[in-house]
Length: 499
Ligand code: NAP
Ligand code: MG
Image (spheres, rainbow, N blue to C red):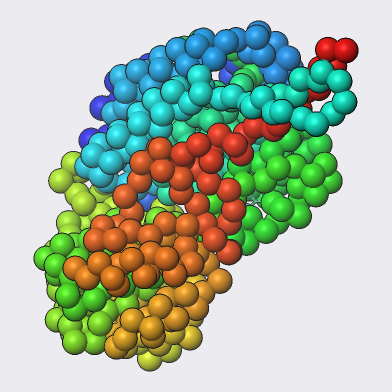
């Protein structure tokens, strides 16, 4: 499939030279500088569109629009009205889903096959979940011990203007994970997509307007992290930053937020352990562990990149994961038969190949992959072979740093105590997996692993009603679940003296 398969006028328009605009206050606007960023298809290396590169002046306009919108008709909409709008948005996303997927696939390489299977459920499920939550926000009536007849109750109010800053690995669904709670709680927002993947976010802006969201409630300012993103993170008119990305940028967001003490939530990266015991159902564990790393070409924040395998089955298991990786159909994600696409950019490919070299130099054994794919047409794109490293030691850089590519470190272990200690010997704490038929092992590790999610006999399952987020350097705050809404609300206590 290619750009000719786009069906909606807005998606087609976004690829035309006339587009290249920011979405501010319900309108398409030129950026102040007229600077542009190129959209490169990582499967071919070809430039296929441009987006505007916003600067501080654009951010000022967008934040001002979001602030005005907070006090406009949006403020007086009832929970039912907000709910109806979110449900309408879900229907529009459903109706335009193929185009949103194709834009994401062209920009960041994800296979259409995967997007259609996983992302539809995620995107629509999230929006419908937040539609429900829009009518479920409430405070408490609290008996107090003040003298006289004083009524006290709490009210949950929107926190205000939210800056949503997201990465490129799942653009549409990451954006929806910010837009959903904004609309459910009555906040407003400025969304800054990743420079490598902005188009589906721009298309969502248009759909949000079609759904009946008032102008200025959701604004999209495309641009570079160090300019647009940094301007949002330090902007005095922003009340909260909802950030998804790397831990290094997360730390800079926290520093930038200090000026007006913004609320910050951080969904960051990880080096997640996936632990396979000899008693596991290996026919399930092999594909589960393999896709826990190779899915989305390894560009998944909670990828199970430290694969701990009980020594008794280590050789057999690692060979099977390697064969599974070798059998995956790697190619241009716009081909519906392809299972694994390219990595997002030349820069990311070089970073991943750099880590593969480091692993080899550190003495890890390359069991499979370990190189760029240069066959035929794929030579034009940024393809890396699914790679399994064996004999990996805990201290190696490939076992401690996030690679964000299709590379797994297979590490043998002997005992439960040992693997528990080694799995937790990381500053991160996002995902974790345990494969076993022994309920005692599963119970114990689900209690002791330092991670925001523990998957037992599965990996990377998600549901909008279930909170997702990190421990330690993987960040704080949760997306999904009722915890997510709390991040976008503040509590007011009201005292009414009835005399
Ligand atoms: P990144 O470099 O941290 O960028 C994330 C976003 O922040 C982008 O929009 C980026 O803009 C922007 N940014 C960069 N520098 C900034 C600054 N100084 N101030 C404000 N914003 C700035 O991450 P990435 O490379 O796009 O994505 C990969 C990372 O995201 C990985 O670490 C991955 O684990 C993490 N991730 C976490 C989750 C989760 O839910 N926990 C989900 C997905 C991804 P530019 O695009 O212009 O650089
Ligand atoms: Mg970046």
